[in-house]
Image: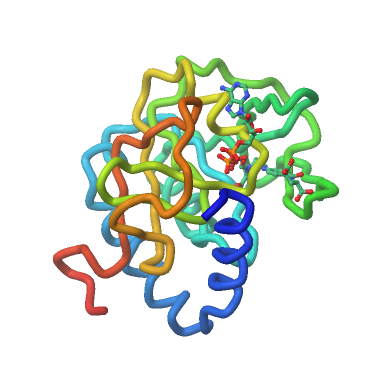
Length: 188
Ligand SMILES: Nc1nc2c(c(=O)[nH]1)N(C=O)[C@@H](CNc1ccc(C(=O)N[C@@H](CCC(=O)O)C(=O)O)cc1)CN2
Ligand SMILES: Nc1ncnc2c1ncn2[C@@H]1O[C@H](COP(=O)(O)OP(=O)(O)OP(=O)(O)O)[C@@H](O)[C@H]1O
């Protein structure tokens, strides 16, 4: 299937998840992430402000703050570029035309200062950790010269044994994929 068609199918599929399935999977993913050495070791973590169909990130942000980590969030820029800005309880946010919240001002942080990036997406392959996102190519561009850890949290409905979409040369493969239900203590 082409990327566009697969993306559309995933948007549809994820929008149909029940609140309880979402909640259960989010809790499972939080347990897996907080037990992960990459999370525990990270001082600066890049996290998105999730939209409705995405894996919930607010609990991750609050846990990071509680653990004294610095949280940085993305701001999209012209020419499909992206930068990460520090996020605190006083950060001013605005909604983009795409419907996502972004920081209004501040100073971008250097890529080399980010220890861990939690990469958003709509689908992932278990075999190579390939990823398909909303189609902007923002993360592929940003991650092309990123040296830290790239990790993703996925609902069951986002995880595929092999990529069922074309994986291009510019697609950046993730270091690790945590799937809800795969964790030792997950109850689902
Ligand atoms: N919560 C969250 N924040 C995020 C991302 C994300 O996936 N999740 N992003 C992850 O990248 C970036 C925003 N990604 C975007 C991706 C696509 C479009 C967009 O305008 N898409 C077009 C179609 C794309 C095309 O074919 O050109 C559209 O729908 O009109 C906007 C933002 C940064 N912030
Ligand atoms: N490193 C890169 N340099 C130039 N163009 C790129 C690069 N990475 C991706 N692109 C372009 O970005 C566009 C979107 O790529 P793709 O469909 O893989 O997005 P995606 O990974 O699903 O989206 P996102 O990263 O925003 O979640 C494509 O047209 C692709 O050519």
